[in-house]
Length: 86
Image 1 (tube, helix red, strand yellow):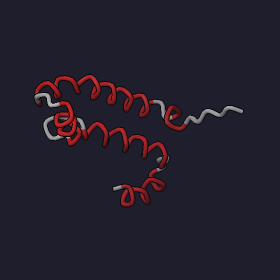
Image 2 (cartoon, rainbow, N blue to C red; image 1 turned 60 degrees about the vertical axis):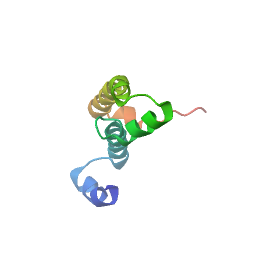
Image 3 (cartoon, one colour; image 1 turned 60 degrees about the horizontal axis):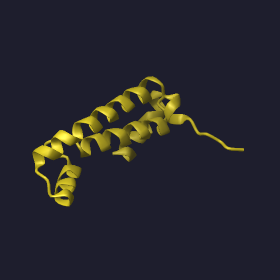
C-alpha cells in the first residue's frame, strides 16, 4: 500500500517518515484486533488457551496502541525525534 500512497504524500505536505510510523502502528493494531486478527491465532496456538481468554487479554494493548497513535498524531515531533549521543 505504501508504494501507492507515497507519491501523494509530498503533494499533501505529509512527512513520509511520520506517515510510515502511523501506518505501522495501525497495521500492528489491526493484527491484534478481534475477531480476525492474525496474531490472535498465533497467540492461541502457542499458548493453548481459549480464544475468549486471548481476546480479553489483548484489549489493554489495543488501548495502549491507540493512545500512542493519538500522541504521535497530535505531537508529530515524537515520531521524528532522533536522540544523538555525542
